[in-house]
View 1 (cartoon, rainbow, N blue to C red):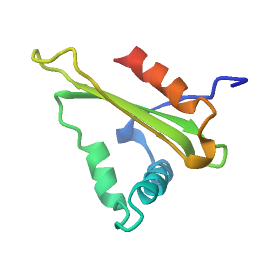
View 2 (view 1 turned 180 degrees about the vertical axis):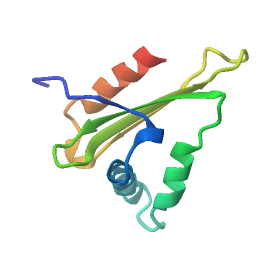
View 3 (view 1 turned 45 degrees about the vertical axis):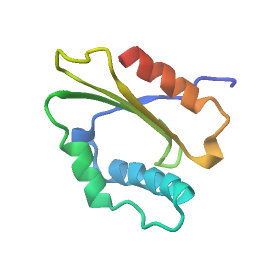
Length: 116
């Protein structure tokens, strides 16, 4: 990869409708790839899930813009702010098929690991 991609830190509570729809679009593309016969994720449910995170969960969201108002890739990491299992975190990486093999997931994974 010639240059590192631009990685944006996202706050779900502060995202506008266009940004949420860009995330939803990526989710739908990847969901259709995984389960082509199933109905696509519902926008309102995704927004509710992203904006209603329990107070004991510490989330971090990141995205790589695609240059046209959408996202080529997203990543998130989260952990629970509780004494039990303080060493555990959960990470999720998503890359649009046409942006794969460019190092985007690697760049996001490094960012997520640094946050955790």
